[in-house]
Length: 465
Ligand SMILES: Cc1cc2nc3c(=O)[nH]c(=O)nc-3n(C[C@H](O)[C@H](O)[C@H](O)COP(=O)(O)OP(=O)(O)OC[C@H]3O[C@@H](n4cnc5c(N)ncnc54)[C@H](O)[C@@H]3O)c2cc1C
Image (tube, rainbow, N blue to C red):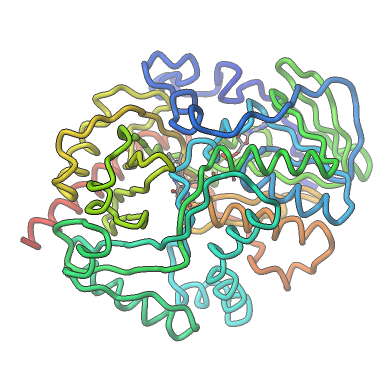
């Protein structure tokens, strides 16, 4: 058995990452004026936080979950409903990870289309996954309704704009591919993209009627509220810094303000882009790229009728995507890629502000009130994964920017696995993700890759005029 015992004191919220290369900088003291979590619009508009404290003392549970985002919390809900005793350990405050900072778009699909998924996972597992994916937005909105989660759900559809003829052809092929599996996207021409979304300059697009948006921090806090009501023990500011085998149990030890310990037979690691060195080799399977978000002043209705009317969400199909949605007060939230650090400067948002006005010229002069951002977990396969790291130690993560829907569903699938569903019957296949080579240099690699993708986007756009 592989040893997964690690002592690490470098959770992003608590201390210095002593293994960072000097040229990687030190995000943790955050010398930048904009804090990716604290400055999120969602912090100002979310439902009240739930009452949680750090774990002190020793407790036992059937299942320990590390990370209280969409994945960990939904796993906790399903397990608790099935009568399992669950402890959730969150290293920072609730929503510190991507779940509290996200764009909150609930979308259908992964980075690979149905044929590619079947080619990768085989006929049976591939088809099962596609069927489950098709229902992801409906499943999330049903979860919200069932538990009466107060998180501003809006299910008014999603427009994806193709910025070139090549992208339009890719979309048409994808829509045909999905259609063969009974999943429908409307294929839009340029005029229809403009009519449905108000976006200018696109060659065509797709519309998905079941997609929508939610308030990501409220969704997180509300799931936590319900989980606590079901008897889940949820501790914040309890970073797990050591994981050891003790007979058939795992012993999790927390540091920081906590110092408590948990003994559990099964551990779910749900740390996605905020994965640290706790589990040997896990961090190397994801590269945390950064996504920036900003939110406008509340826009008047006559402007909202022209820009993404009817609260449709929007994303484009460039390599470096632009994504937009409204919040409940009519603030437009727009997102783009960011620099490879956890704190930001206002200048980092110059490009996204320019892009927004290129696509929606009516937004010139709009005031941007909030700026924030966070980490997005990219994987080599461009797909999430479930990995059995060791007996009773399972990880589920790697959403490549699609974790609002997929993370929620992954939580349920992980819970079903723990509850005894055979591996071969899970709706998401178990696999061993390939690590990134030269992971310690991922900042440099990702910076180069982003620059390359940006260049490719510009060349494609130029050839397109
Ligand atoms: C700016 C931004 C915009 C995004 N927009 C969208 C979008 O519009 N649509 C979409 O589908 N996806 C979007 N995403 C991605 C999506 O938000 C994530 O995929 C999803 O939130 C992941 O949820 P999670 O529960 O797996 O992980 P997270 O929410 O990141 O939670 C992981 C948690 O683990 C904790 N943790 C880490 N290590 C430890 C430890 N050792 N001990 C204890 N706790 C630990 C962290 O503190 C963190 O809170 C966006 C992401 C970002 C950053």
